[in-house]
Image 1 (cartoon, rainbow, N blue to C red):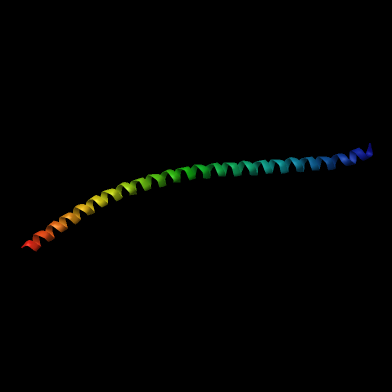
Image 2: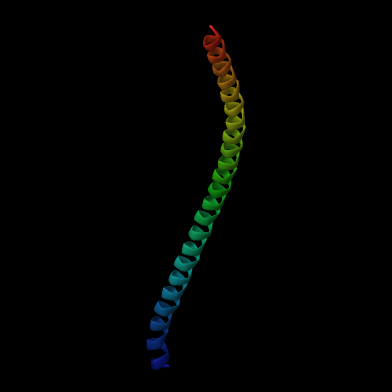
Length: 85
């Protein structure tokens, strides 16, 4: 019985240490999963914004090409009028 009483407190220390380490590990995994979820949400939002931006730039590019074509035609017309004078 004496040996059992002496071992019991040591076993409790190991049990408490094991529970604390398991809790700390679980908390760490939870924090990593939460951070990864936030990063995933941020990634999706940035991807959507990039797609919207590229679509807008593409549409503006087409408009700019049309305007440059009109300007070029106007300049060509004006040069033709000046050359005829």
